[in-house]
Amino acid sequence: MQTLDAGVGQKGARKGVGPLIAPLSDLQRPLRQQIFERVRAAGMIPRVQVAKELGVSPASVTTITSELIDSGLIEEVMTARDSDSGRGRPAVALGVRRDAHRVAGMKISDREHTAVIVDFAGNLIADDAIPRRPGPMTLNDLLLAMETLLDRVCAKAALSRADLSAIGVGVPGFVDSLDGIVLWSSILNDRNVPLASVASRRLGLPVWIDNDANLVALAELWFGAGRTLSDFAVVTIEHGVGMGFVLNHRLYRGSQRLGMELGHIKVQLDGALCRCGQRGCLEAYVADYALAREATTALNWGHKDAPPIGVLLESLYDHAKAGNATARSIFRRAGRYLAVGLSNVINLFDPALIILSGERMRYDYLYASETLAEMDNLAINTGRPRPPIEIHAWGDLLWAHGAAALALSSVSEMLLAANREIAAQ
Image (cartoon, rainbow, N blue to C red):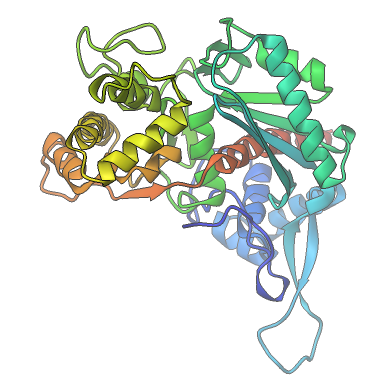
């Protein structure tokens, strides 16, 4: 299991965060941005290595890195030479200036709100979590929860809001990240909420928002198994079913920024009712509220006082592990529907890796050998091996790290664009 803390390695070496893009990859982005991202991903890297990997002249790299140093975005880092003789000056590498900016990342969810603060190099400074009862909130209640969580995590970090440059926020549902609008979410009473602008006014900081499953993919891209992969998929299973897809080292969102809604592909015409209001969605058979509904009916628990969903699911899982045939069949049925969804991901996108993430990954029945075999049967038989599948049950702080990566990326792009304009004058 990967670590989420970029941290500092042995002998003070910086680990770096962000996608590790193959040398000489032409991503058609400004050279200044490519150089900065290369430095950030490497942690520490000499100028000559940057020039070699990007296929540009050392003089160009020297000119641009000097501008980035003058702007306070990167700095020179002294490193030990390979020789143990101790002779000569230390080698000089480039690294992101950690204290240049700090950002917060939040996940606002049905059961728990989580937050992290990281520095400009992606190192964790502080984190916090606040539990809550499931159910939709008013916009004012949501803003109050965000404000409370932000102040708590800032206090842990010994920082004020003014010390932050931006906030990234992940919420479940249909989110237009570019316009900052939540079109629909299970945690909000209202639709078409301009959450980014409203939260920015309330908190006094720039706010970027995105679908929470996208931010899990972003966390994997920046801190986890996706750093070296150009294309991979993340499927999240919690109170809903989500998906994030990375294409050519970048999140793919679709033309209206609303794509990758795996939980709402139809697996049964006129089937079970989904939270979105439609019937037959994958989520209506796999998400935790779907498992709870099945358990209440099949195990005749409807006469009891309704416990929290988490408690009910733990009881269902305990029954399954103890050999209860009905409980096991509930997980087995959900696993079969999950196999349908995953086979569609394989057939449509052919990703290099599929990561299953979320709290429900503790329930191994969902990815049992029978489920994976069913997925293999449903995927197109090309004669080649299917993409590997990894299970990452990291917990909610992973989602908050993805939100922090969203804020870091947004801040970086704004600063680099401003730096480019100044250099052009």
